Length: 114
Length: 108
Image (cartoon, rainbow over all chains, first blue to last red; front, side, top):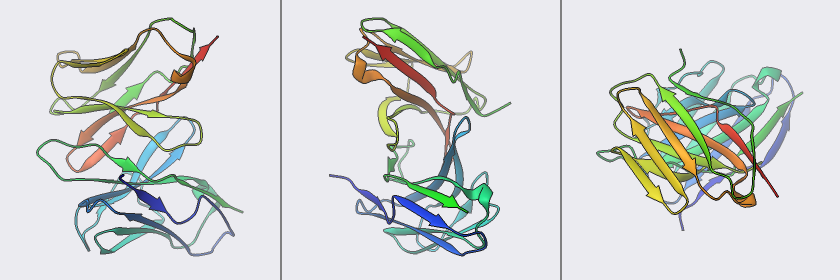
């Protein structure tokens, strides 16, 4: 059974704090993604990684950074949390193939910045 | 123009009804398309893939119209359990672009 696990379901942080969101997948997938989901805006890609130590900016990378030191783990870092980063954060992974393949998601982390 | 656009709905339909959603995309080079389903407070999960003109799986039919650059999802004989948000997905290179989703409520 495929699995993508995010470290927290709910998180409350203070403005200015450094926040780490962790994601682990057990499927040996090359691709990993971080999205945020907000009402009316859908899922927006923050960063993705197609290999260890490789990362690419998505559509809304400002205020975020990522780390992929091991194939199975992809971390999202909020350098200095702000209230406009309150959102649902979803991690996903997929395998590289000739056609884009199914993405498997973690259960999501609902982050509130106060 | 957004890369992937969906009518947000909500679509309110009675049990047993047939309902269809459309999704338009802007990248004419896209080769594969997906519909995901997301239940309230849950993660998205793959519903159907569309690589050619269409795909059918039970009560669900996905069709692709390349000339007009849209994909559609048809649900026949709607069930209460079909109530969810349906996300249209169009990959772009390594990126996966999601539409904002269409909300469906099926009522008894």
